[in-house]
Structures are given as structure tokens and as C-alpha cells.
Image (cartoon, rainbow, N blue to C red; front, side):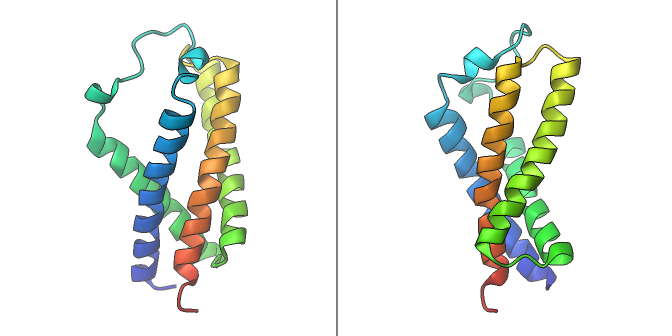
Length: 139
């Protein structure tokens, strides 16, 4: 798969990741997320304190990760397969990260860990579908 196709797919998937994350975490779960906090205080930034460039960059890198895996190694160009692969990758990545953070910090309670893993899988299924769809265009 061409580098340009992977980069374009990663860019589009990254933009989708940003908006899907905003819809899920802010619009749908906004009020609930406080109930997932551990005993650590002052760790979440308000919207006026967010470091937006870092948030955008992180989402773009997430989109690029899926596009690179799908385009270079897995040859995934079907949105359904991309959604499945995205969900599985997220279950493993978020599960590993969240359980390590739960074990070593007071940032989140166990309910927050479980919800984050599920939400990450759902969001990444959407991002994976978009990445695969973009990679498969023109085939």
C-alpha cells in the first residue's frame, strides 16, 4: 500500500477519532466521568485548561496507527474488518494501559477502567472502519 494512501487514511481516521472521542466522552458520558475518578484530585483539565495541540496530535497519531497497521501489515481494506480489528486492538491496548494505571495510580476506580476499555473499543471500531474504508477506496 502506498505511503500517501496510508497518510491520508491516517489523517481522516485521526479526525474521526477526535470527534468520536468528543461525542462519547463529552456529550454522552460527560457527567458520568466524575464518578470514575479515584482518590487523586486535580488530574483532569477543564476545557479552558486543555492542551489542544496535544489532544489533536494524539488523535491523529491514533488514526495513523490504525492506517499503518491495516495498510502495511494486515492489508485490511474492508470497513467491517477494520471495525473488528480496531475494536480488538483497542481492547488490548486500553486494557493493558488502564489496568496498569489502575494498579499503580489513584486516577480511576475499577468502574472507570472497565468503561474506558469498552468506550475505547467502540470508538476504535469506528476509527478502524474509517481507516480501512479509506485504504480500500479505489480498489
